[in-house]
Image (cartoon, rainbow, N blue to C red; front, side, top):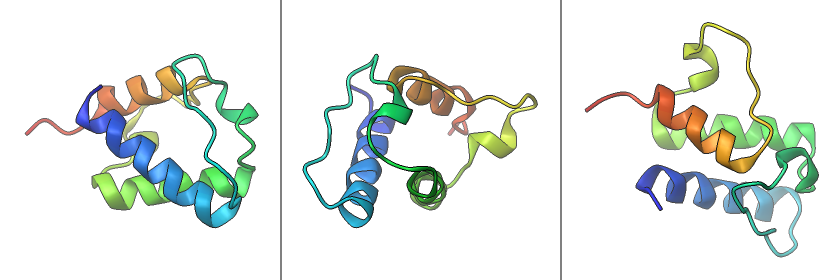
Length: 85
């Protein structure tokens, strides 16, 4: 598991704790994000929190409108637009 994936999982767990308050669901590669139980406001907070934690927002960097469906696609999308160091 990459550091980026770990960071995404950590931020998801933090947002989940604040927004839902129950045990964090398992995020498997094929987990459908919209079926995790986090609502649209929760996802907006999640993406905003990732921007803050990671220092970039791939949704503003991408030329095409795209929304990943699964957790694996979400991580891959962030990897694709992660700034090179």
